Length: 148
Length: 148
DNA sequence: TTACGAAACTTGATTCATTCCAGAAAACTG
DNA sequence: CAGTTTTCTGGAATGAATCAAGTTTCGTAA
Image (cartoon, rainbow over all chains, first blue to last red; front, side, top):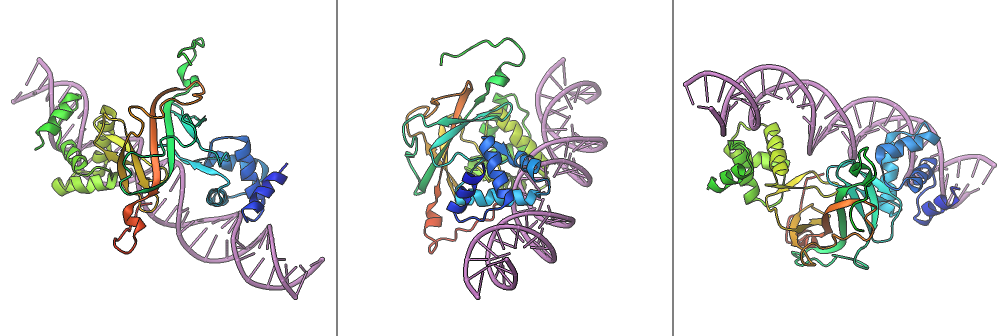
């Protein structure tokens, strides 16, 4: 079960510890969760893990490229374990829910800035803002709108 | 000088107050500044303005659409008065500097998500990450920044 | 297998952007 | 110019995230 997670850690020369495996497992099972949720999930298995340990682990994993930090404007840090591909996110303005969105325009869309002001750009991050299905239908019948 | 700023406020039915005019003037003169910088600039003219007033003003102006809040991941809130057009930003990973970038692909680039998961999307925000010219040439410039 | 050095973790305090609160001041309306 | 509402002042509080010192655990080599 955690063998692959252990392999992930060893692949990037990180020590294999129980908190790290628990964090990776939590992120594998929950696509986009914030730090508090990670702490809660980790403590479901290892009650004695400190919040500082989770912060340290998340930073180590992010620096190693095993997880990605997502932080939409006005929100706290979220993390996901889907890395390596070029995908973006939709964020609900109402409840803050996050969902994955694949690149609309082939490989690296919008990565070519019209005027880069001399910046050396290495990443184009796209955040789609909107309202999620749950927030669209508070309690009324599910009326389908939109054509897509 | 502040006549146009006053007109901006009245156009959106906001009361015209000195703190608000000072905030608008600060944002007009400085394209992308954070809250602390706004407070400092406002107090250069009106030393008695409280930090809470600036927070309130920035929120009111943002809600009214007169200014836009920019908050790249890991940074504190920044504000700009260039609104109404669809432009994006380059952010320096080293010093946090922000510069404007016009839309690369015409009007509303990337606004069509490949799979919107049922979200009703109203905005596509693009953040280009890279390194600014000052941080690229450490010799010539003092690219020091104290932000967190 | 055991000992050792380095890293990872625990505990607790601290920082700092932002918000909350109650009272005083200022802006628009009639 | 008085009344009503909004806005601002001053101070305290919140909460995500970080810092620091000491202890434990991991990986390696004897």
